[in-house]
Length: 365
Image (cartoon, rainbow, N blue to C red; front, side, top):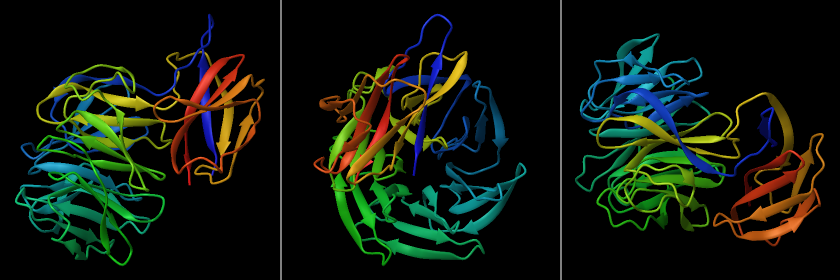
């Protein structure tokens, strides 16, 4: 698999940033929980005390996509364009087709975050804040089944598939990140080290990396499949501040979603209306015009032994590999790099060229 990275250059100068946090400003204040990303268009569920799904255009214009729901928590979409919404208060999944809302399936109490697999089966977590929990599946024919319940599922919330094919679930109140294998064996992969009552919110996978919103302590966490846990972005203080990953501040981060290219992770705020969504950008320039240049490709990604870099019409001054703390691990001019000695995990690769610098992440298997 190859990943493409782009540099946007202005007339006067050219420059880029590494990963950083910015605002996606909205033209009105709305409540929000889970979200679905289509390009740079967002669909936002209003949450347990709401009844709307909002559509947010790339310019920040907010409109009502659907209404009349009963506590919408999360949204997924199948290939035919039909959206599915979990309604926490109504214990059901509704579908939205061409703006028309209809009941799709009746499920157990407390349906919340959802994900969908390659067969378009929908997976729904259930919790009613009483220490119980379950996961429901709904296939393309509308058949409802219980995948797992109770045991380690204690108020389960965020749910997604990682690149290893396993299902991962975040428990709201004890912070455990659970791995569910194909035979439904459940184990604890890691625990989010939060002191808050709401230790986790939603969970989204990007390759071998799990991103978990820490509602109670205002951080976005990175959990690797070896069980390691780190704060990916946030200071732990409730706030609203952009900047680098380490200096950015979040306030009760909750719903999350990647855009199709995985270059942006959108992060919604829980508890109260707001007129912004924060976004974590991977290797996106602060400049917006005039010329789009395809600078380089990194492949394979994930990689095990050799990481290849293909530079397009650029002289390469330096290639740097860094860990998520920003510590320099390797500096070279080679475009084929032996990474076999690196530990499994997620790393930054940064390319320095006459046009400036550009970076993104790669995963070491």
